[in-house]
Length: 277
Image (cartoon, rainbow, N blue to C red; front, side, top):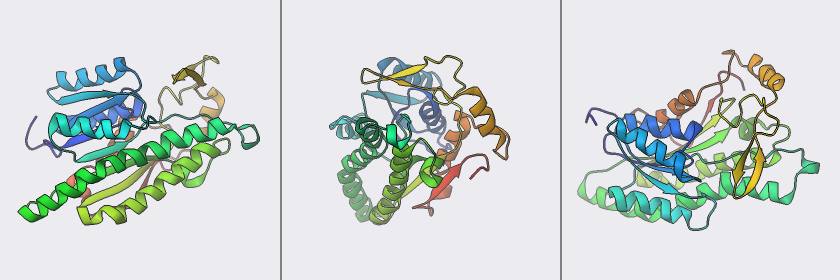
């Protein structure tokens, strides 16, 4: 990788990066020189992302498993430190939706969505805390300070709310609160902590549902995915740019918070939604 790349030799964790937006984030960071720890529930998509990065001349390794596992945060952070000797960027991206109106929403739906979108990022960041504090202290004493980056993935549902997504909206609102709190706690360690709130981004989770039985497997449970084509069309008509975003465009918004140009930006929520509030 070219040393002129903005993220040359940085070490990045990207959860949920075997597919969709997470994959695009991992590829974008790697294209700018970052060494990436890729994560997915399943080995095959994670391995494919790793292979794509390596084929392009980058460095990547996989850490397979669910971010909701109690030991995942320590394992994820440990993979970065053991493989690459450090940690500079954390992108908390993994997640899915499981929608219903509140009177039909089960405790399981509520708890599982909060677990993946809020508790899991909290555990990953907690697991990274010791390394970040100790590294910051060493670097300060040596007169070689290093700025690190955390980007938490939120949603416009967490900023403005969305009918049928009480669980998801609450979790994504919570991640914005966590972002703002941690920006204050970790500023002393020279860490920028920000959120990117996505609007309609076209992925396998939001694409038009031509197959009413389309679903994803989450820990052996089938979760329906896809959006009714007419609802999708109506949603896009309300976006000033006239369309949903691509995974690559979503990755670009995350990238903005990872590069040196954003070194004095922290505690912010950036809406990436094509102009639609």
